[in-house]
Image (spheres, rainbow, N blue to C red):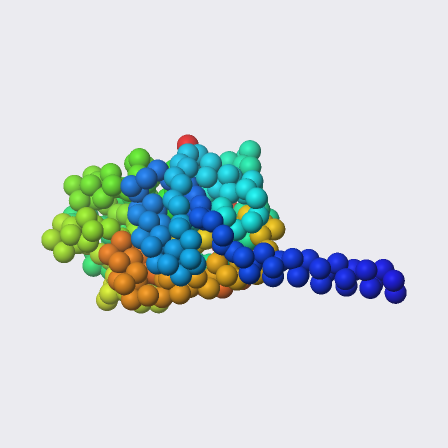
Length: 322
């Protein structure tokens, strides 16, 4: 009985401390680590969040670019940071859900090292084909690929990238074999599909890709979102041809594990308000992503559910990140 009372008292005390910290939080600028170099799409998205988030939370948001090791260098730094709400990670599928499946000596656990805060945005992948591919949608692509004497070529932004794994999953579900042609980043893959160096590509949207689609040099065959997406209005769903096929790139904010719950709630409320503004939503659409907030629990579920899915793809397709 005495032990129970002591435990109850401790729980109440910890809760009181957490609430007190949140009352005074934040009292100084917040650092947001972007695990990629400055100037990339993730960095641009983070910088677009700076002003509206800072206005709501009442302190500046400082962007700190820490690229390296497929994003895991920056991710590891946040995992080691003090859990006080002043160091956050601008995360996505890559360093959190995919890279740890390839890097054996990873310095963090994606499910144990972080306290999820909120989604920031999500983006479907566009299934595009070069102009020489005689197909207008996913069904026709599958039929076309099966009729060819040689396997088609598909591009990716590199071994182990989201586009690489997503295409391998697509091939499994479609019952196809294609030859992987890896490039160094997204920009070269856009040039490759435009020049018909490869036949298909699963990639996130970009201004350049949209221009190629409008010109007719690249064909938009489908979109990987579970429902119609404002990123690609009117694009047919890949999931209609391959039942249940749905993949989205996600971007979100993670804090170090142990960050007090009241601080997580305060951060979540500020982020959800920021990404709900019409101005930021419109701006994000120009980047090829849909601004969307979430609860911490929803972001945790996304991460927990997709890790075993990507592990299965890697094992079944014998994918190597090299």
